[in-house]
Amino acid sequence: MRAAIIGGTGFDTIEGIHLEPEIIHTAYGDVKVYRGGGEWEDIFFLPRHGISHSTPPHRINYRANIKALHQLGVTHVLATLAVGSISAHLPPGSLVAVDQFLDFTQNREGTFFNGGQEGFAHTLMSYPYCPALRQRMIEIGAKLGVSIVPKGTYVCTNGPRLETAAEIRMFSILGGDVVGMTGVPEAPLARELGLHYAALAYSINWAAGIEAGKEITFIEEGLEALKKSVLTVFLQTLRSS
Ligand code: HPA
Image (cartoon, rainbow, N blue to C red):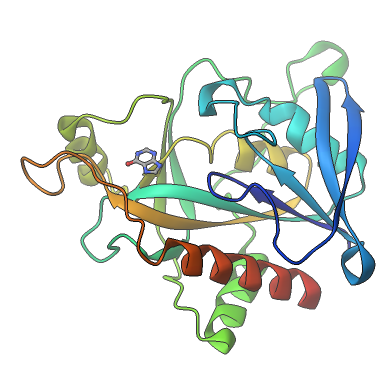
């Protein structure tokens, strides 16, 4: 098995692992991917926003990122997603193994199947995240004492602006639990290429208007420990898959 970690906001490197950069040329553009050293040489690391965190969510080349991993022979992908919390049972600081998404993005290149030479297919998307990999991640979390909420619906907005309180109210009515800007089309693109993909959302704020009348504030306390837990769960999950 070859595995990759896609790191979102706050995950620009993997502490404790030597990483060697490699440029992967794809039909959709070049991607800088990092290969782990030593005992982690089967693990690739891809910082979703680029290494200096300079690409905003709506400008990320999701197709190039996923294609690059596919070209490297990667079969299993775990991704981090920074989110705001909509549901009362997921306060900031929660980790959620999301199992569904609602797509509110616009104008993103969201498929490898545009017809012509690329061909086309209607990829099944009823359960967009790999159930086995999610389950494994949840089990490893339990073993390590890291509390992971086993399911949740991820709402993907286009960004880069944050949401209005009314939008969050709408997402709540539609069944959204957490909201972020980068989970789609990453997950469906991975599925189009047959990759086993799962994501762990980590909440850094209450979504707009959840704390009535208050502007959004982002947590700082406990964030480093939370991120460390995410990476530990990911590495142990990939090692045991
Ligand atoms: N909304 C959208 N994306 C986010 C948020 C949010 O509240 N928090 C972290 N990423």
